Image (cartoon, rainbow, N blue to C red; front, side, top):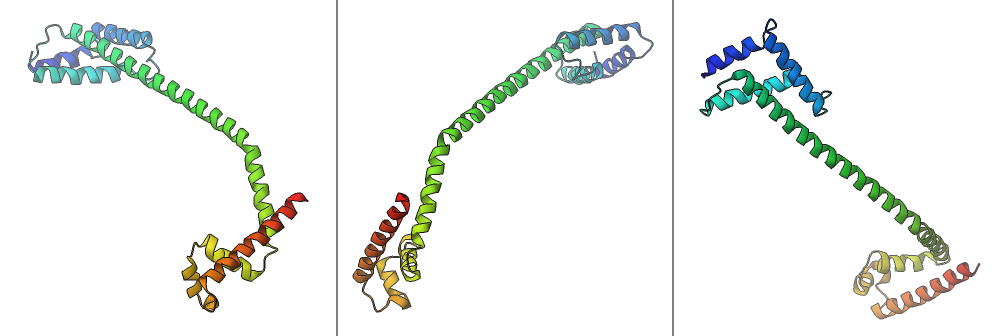
Length: 191
């Protein structure tokens, strides 16, 4: 069968005055209902794909003897393919949904179990902030340079405000500040 004769027979088969056309549309609707795809696809969607496959088959040199039988068989196979795709999509969506629910529940459980620890850490941070308020601005500045900014003792010694103090004296000063901070912190914790 040539492409031209396939086009002519396909067009004639789909004409409104053809009883074979009516039975073909009924057949395709039944198959769509059978595979529960009737809400997603229309017979015309199926016939468009069948037509494209028919053209491709002819270009590949295949022969089509009975066009109506070939269309029905190809339509059925295509609907089955769509059904398998839908099943895979649904399975993937269900699996994703289950996984998402599991992760959400797990995160909520972790959050609930971590809540007391988070509150304890927040409480300790507040107490530490209170203890830091007992340090002089100069003491806070030295702690900031060493602990927060991570400067070496030599870098701190090179700063204009500490040039007259040796690195070992700065180190000793920091030790006294930390001791003072600990005492302030523990006195706040006891309250």
